[in-house]
Amino acid sequence: MDYYGFMLRFNRFPLLLVLVCALAANAQTPDNKPTEPLSSAMDGELFYQLLLGELNAREGEPGAGYSLILDAARKTNNAMLYQRAVDIALQARSGQSALLAANAWKQAKPTSREANRYVLQILIGLNRIDETLAPLQQEVNTADPRDRVAVITSIPRYFARTVNKKLAAATVEQALSGYLTMPWVGVSAWTVIGRMRFEADDVSGAIDAALKAQAIDAQAEGPALLALSMMNVKVYQAEFIVKKYLEGHPQPEVRMEYIRALLDAQRYTDARAQLKIITTEKPDHADAWLIRGALELQDGKLDLAESSFKHYVALAQTTNTLPARGLVQAYLSLAHIAEQRNDFPAADAWLNRIDNPQDRLNAQLRRAAMLAQQGKLDEARALIRSQPASTTADARLKIAAEVQLLRDSKHYNDAYDLLAKAVVSNPDDVEFVYDMAMVAEKMGNLEEMERLLHSAIESHPAYPHAYNALGYSLADRNIRLPEAKQLILKALTYLPGDPFINDSLGWVEFRSGNLPEARRILEAAFKARPDAEIAAHLGEVLWMMGAHDQAISTWKEGAQINPENETLLETLKRLRVTL
Image (cartoon, rainbow, N blue to C red):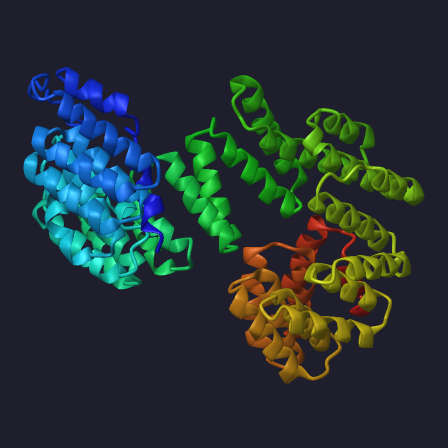
């Protein structure tokens, strides 16, 4: 571990002039206490010693410079000289020498918080965690009572690079043992203990600490934020701590973090419910409206999405403080909504509001999609190709956009050829291989599709979409169903709870004759992500189970989301159902 680089940030007094001035006047120590007058100590011999020490330190003899400066510090009992000796040792990457000087400083000035902090940091850097208890206790105990919560909260940063996380957690808990039942301070102490336990992979201990912190003050943010940090790495058993906090009068920022955690877990229904709460309670919270609009647009609820995005734009115009990226997203989304309604002039008007050169490519790609929708495919492709690509990501985005236009226009051969060239130029881009497989399926070349998906799995074994696509294709063709199920279950190990992968799982259960299980899975998937294709599958399961009214209702809901969905249209045609 490179602990020296971390501690070099303390090097703040490298010049001899600073040291001389400190000795020639009543200097202030780092603890803001005046030192004793030292003018009598600044004789020629001491001046020469300091000069020689600095010259040695600068000219490649840090050991000699360190010894001279430390000796001068001991003679004068000056905090700045002790600190300079420590800094020279750290610059020379000599942790033991730095610790020796820091301990000498602390011994000379036992009440110095700065000296104690150096000792603590160096011990941690040397990975001598078992020796940090006393300086850690002193750091907390000597803090101003008004600052103690902030001091306690900062403790995990000290141990961020520690190798022995369990020992660090135990040491911190022992150091804070005297504060665990105190109001306010106790909340911070338990929260820090929980964070240290979590860093040490003690999940149950971290949850227990968060609960104890919340028991002291149910409205404290710390325990909820700790629980959210656990949720962000898939420890969902901590969620009830967040919910308990949200029952009171939570800060909107904490609720937003919860919403982001729900979105990351693809729990869209729960995220929608939380967004409704925050936009009702805090109607001027812009980010909530932007996310709410994105979910409504995803669900095909164009009127609601338009209202949400316009509310966001209005807030941006009122406050003039919202990030440009959010406005660009709102403008692109509003243009897409207008495009869905075939109102191309309105869509173009929204795109014209995007004047940032960095976002102009996205606006032009949206214009290309509009041209293609109006039957001007060649013009749309020319527009995409004419756009400059300043980064590799831009170049990739241009290819993906052109492929999407060709797929939407059913020009599958052209899309396949374009992707084949992209794969040659970008052999490690698994998404190009995946897209190529999906186009091969549209072309009816199922053998090529399987070959490409197996290739994607072999080169990127943690890429879940390849497993899901191959499993779904087998299930849809009603062949090799056990293999199909295993592929889909493998995909779910990488994306647990994903509604589209669960849709595939429900479909393979349906093909296997397990209708009740298929219905259960598909209903949960459709609730999590209202989508026309999931509606098509769920409706067919309901239809085969004799629940015709429910099936028709589900298909109607799917048609409202996307009336052009091929799977939905094919299902209705095959079952001879008219909505």
